[in-house]
Image (cartoon, rainbow, N blue to C red; front, side, top):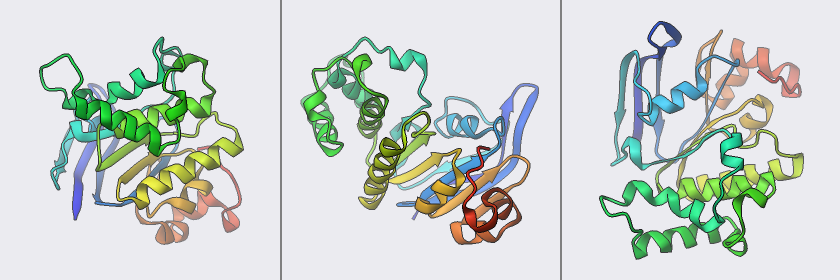
Length: 238
């Protein structure tokens, strides 16, 4: 079942077009990697899917009871986030906000969901710890648990392994794969194309070249063979 259909999307700001004619669709349970050069509009595409930014043209359709606010979002790590003066539990719980309605207090169900997602990601023991004292890998797990509080359907992850060491990176990829196996649709921006095609089902390449299709077809496409190099061993940071 299709959850998201984008037709002829044009992305950017008032007088700057970053990308146009983006047409692609995302099925329930899909794992889509978005790759492309810096400045190609990858993060802008995510913000547009979340309705945090308006498209300059084209349409986005949400199906399967999905709405822009029922998508979980893990933004790029920023200094602001690294400095959250809150406990891990508070950060995770804040992901339940879009289901709060008008009350300012978290329901029992929300608290239960926060606890469940902390367990799911193996961070229950960190609940009372101060977020800013955690390692980068722990912080990413906290932010992933926070994103899961918003959704059981779709996660948008913007470079979720940027700046993490190789061991933590592979743990993060395994976690994301596990969530995908549990039926959650994953859309991930990645700068490490060789690694992402190992996990993804589909690839959307935007920028100098456009490609949308399966990982297998991507490897054979001009964009894919160029960026993956011979045998896909080159780690191009694009």
